[in-house]
Length: 392
Image 1: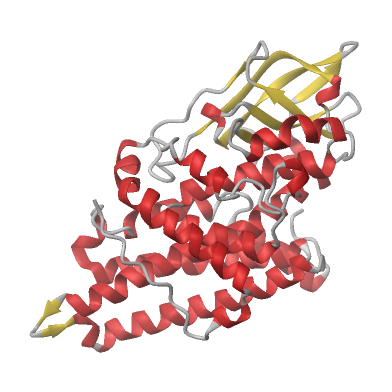
Image 2: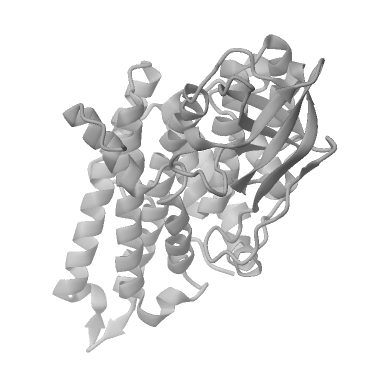
């Protein structure tokens, strides 16, 4: 069992930019991660199993739908508080943060933003409490970065529709009670539907053999002539702006979350560099090790300021999807680089479960790809600054 001695790096005193409430929320989640996640996560990652017992704690902390209004069971928090929550959870493990991100940003948010009042009252309180868990169906076997090419579709059949198709790489799918699924109607328009477990023809086979996000449950969504009541169609959105709006919320959480993984790797490497003796002194006393640590804390500090400013813009409803995209890509890139450098500082010990480095590194190889690959986010920024679409 790993001893969690984590201390957050804060080289530019970013804590002074936070309110007392925001710091209290962060510290509460951090304490929970140290008590409930760190002691067990290496074992669950080795067994490739999601620790379902964490669901109750995540719900009690308000990590499911933190920004959803309290009247629907959410915590009614601001976006910086939401980001800090994701930072602390991913400091524990990216897979656990994925579970929370999916529940809040990809399931609860679209029901709140695009759903009817009846749908909000039916689903959101149970999702917020963790009584029901959800998943988000957009990516298909042949359509990832190009979701507009999806072939999952439904046809009108009176008081219900008939849904056919498949989605893959879906976090939470194996145990989800509900799925927010994006499919084309008979006119070819993309619409959102809430599909419930138990509907005939709806199955969720689990994905095995992953080297990344091993403590997260991943699966497929398969729809074989599934009858979905028309009342389960989200009425207030049509087209790709629906799922892309959800992804912007989730990418915001990832921007903070991946930074948490970077901080954990840096903190572990810094401590190890002071304790590991070679050639008669701590390896932290050698120039090349100090270079690595200096570059790590520099990139972490820049990313801290970037996500904090993005949080301010989110709170003011001024943040653009392109700004969110930049922050997501930057945080994951620096986290991957820091994980790799931290592994070198740890030497051979860096590949063992005694330290979190290799688990973070493997997890981040998924985070750099899902919800917009590194390349896609670069093109989003490129299109935003040049005004020229390079996607086609």
